[in-house]
Length: 189
Image 1 (tube, one colour):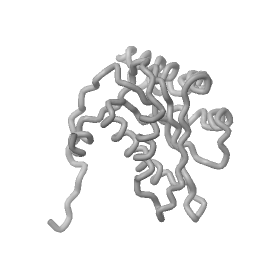
Image 2: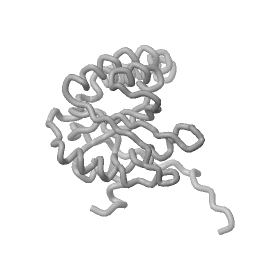
Image 3: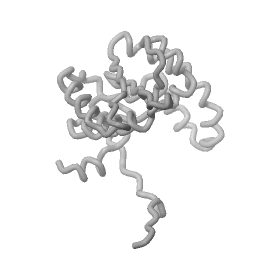
């Protein structure tokens, strides 16, 4: 499959089959993630891959995060209770993904969190996962309210949790939303 096809066909998957993912396949995907460009070539990202009881412990934390977002969802989707219920279930289960990946930023020489470099690595991760027949979705809602609890669970200190990525074999095939107009500005052409 060509890269252009992978980019256009990859979708955010929120429902997964229970099929396990081999560690060899995860290692291949994670290796490709680390080939992303990074600020000053520091490659100062950190990934934590969870399954089993550690994943279950993360889901207990995630379940409690939903209450923070419920009022916002109720305001924005007042006529769509299925969306609110779907988000609640997702916070509780992460779509039953067999593996959860935590993506942590490194530090720039200024001491600032380098969220940009790890974001590039996550894009590589998501595209290479799709190429291997796996689904992913970038999630960060739980990060906004439960980062300290997650870090305590994993034993991470002094790193910024940027996003949480469930990964697994897709149990759904989401449709591609149309591309929005007016997102590119040309000057001098």
